[in-house]
Length: 291
Length: 321
Image 1 (spheres, one colour):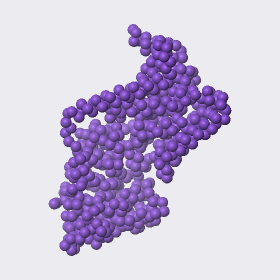
Image 2: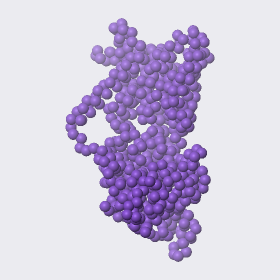
Image 3: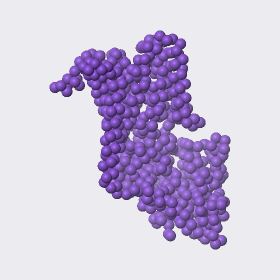
């Protein structure tokens, strides 16, 4: 079975130094004297420096160390309870970093929220809620609109464009709860796209999603990466992690590996992360039987 | 012209006219707030507030007589709403436990206060069942101001309140102060509850808040339509309730309490909406539904991941070797 993904997703990595430039790109001197330090920090969307995260007094995740550049995708992999959601919450500034640090777009996590968008699992939202697809997507614009003011025509156009990007342009007037799980997940991604974030965080976006929706999600994510948006996606699906991401962070209460999928998902490390759920067959391959 | 007489003539009497204005205002604002109460599933909080303001009513009455009731209730309602927001946001205690504690604790304080001076109890029955027919111009002014404040707050913060109701975690992730939004809504609910208590009484006020939105939700799944129907239905039922109560009391010698009749009309409207939606569902089911997407994706989830992971990890392992 070949990967269920479309080609453009894989095409993103490989050239590390020719990152998408931030908007100030015209002013930087072109040529071989690219300022190393400045440019590198401007291109860094997310940096973990030996970060540990605790709920109250108990540390649930520690030793997270690594960097994600703009336009790149990081997959968070690990069994249930490994700390994937915890790490996402810490990047959002909803959980405190108890030691080390997390730097989001050059700032502390809570200070960067305006440029970060979060896509929750569609299943966590109430399906009976009387709200249309278009209204959900428009929520992505709220921060930009600010308190009190109404959405403008431009906001509505941006929301509609985001809905088109996930292939649901014609469902704008439908009630959110009537859509399938995969379609609702796409609507939530559209909401995040409408916010025009520089860093996108997705919590298990492929869980229980049908093939059509998965394709649509992957295509939209690839387009976003092309515009320089960095993406963090937590998933159970090792195959998807491999095809979708430039970097993989393998977790189980601590960071086990951080790097390109081919290195981070090596058999020894998978065994370490999944323990008894990692089955070895024929000496070379590791099959994860439970996630 | 009999119809017009029946529905309009009673309000030529000044006290009936005042009652009508009061119930139209209350019906509209309670129903508007009720839509958010429904979205946030805060019906129980509304009920808690109606009971928890009791000690405020008693103390207000002790200090300022009848005119002290609303200020007293308002202070206590604000304290309870703030206290509930604080308790619920600590996450050390569940929301319903917090509400149950506030309800019983506050109500008990009120009972203790009342039981010390028996003479008050008769005056306070008005608090329990309302005195819609005795509202004066000052009461109407207070209600109008309350309605204006509540409507303004809801209109100004509607985007954020909607986001918070739909996706609280998303609102938090977007950097919205969720506790502030909660406090805002809880205070608005408290304000409306106190305004409505005087007219329909603590026992019945929850009907004004909860029923119009619930009935509207049965009729449609569109938020703007729910709001419109709800805000029309509240005053309409208030008007019909007053007419029914007047007609029964004056022309048929059946004494119907105005507030309670309004609530009965609301319940009847809900029953109609319920019957309508059940009928629609029944006839809708007769026509076939095209597909069941959620079930399809369920079966997909249970089958495909192990396959993919097997192939993936084997490629990873051989790639790494």
